[in-house]
Image (cartoon, rainbow, N blue to C red; front, side, top):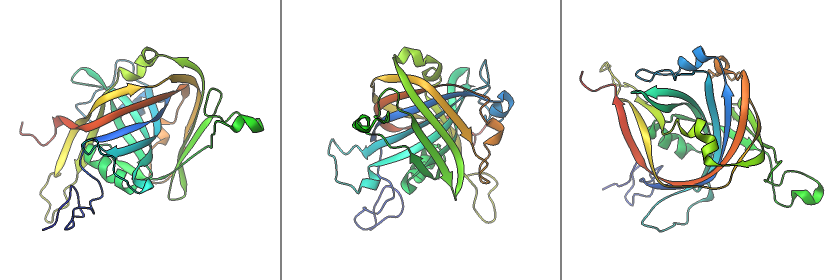
Length: 275
């Protein structure tokens, strides 16, 4: 008898590419607030998602998460590559049944297991190379501002198949409160689109799964939030479609330390449900 949470199954159940939810997460979320062509952003929204009252705003966020499954409070010793990942996401504010939310339109990550998990959750990651600038609290000894504190410029780039997908920077300079990020947090929870295509032969004529869902979190806490300047640009990688939403203006950058527990998802719209 084989066991596991996901394939591949094995007799002991230890070969699954991911383990059961809930999972613990903690990391410093980099948020870049930008403006782009409203028509191009609205074109990313699948019905029944609708444009917001004031279209044209979007967000890029990226975080290096410490993560592990929550196994009755026990922290198992795992390979280092299974204890963290880096992700970059583009979110487009919208309305879902008249309520504010944000569509996870694009996502990239640096772990194969996160690609699989994200598709189960609707976030549809692509595996990428994500590089970031170095920082250390003792950088000031050599005269460098890259201490990780105020005045540090955090740079990250995302590339796939040798082609740059995006590059951004955030340089924090001022502490702010969570209320100051209401323009971002009012659009949460994030809405994702899950789609598992019809790969049958002959085709059945409909996907196996197609719905909108939202992730359910608990035990969420935030650290000191910092605001500053930011930059963002999208590359012309041939397996991407970002140039139509190239930023016309970058409005600011934020660093938001956070920790939470991911419980699972709830489906908010099922495209395959009978009319």
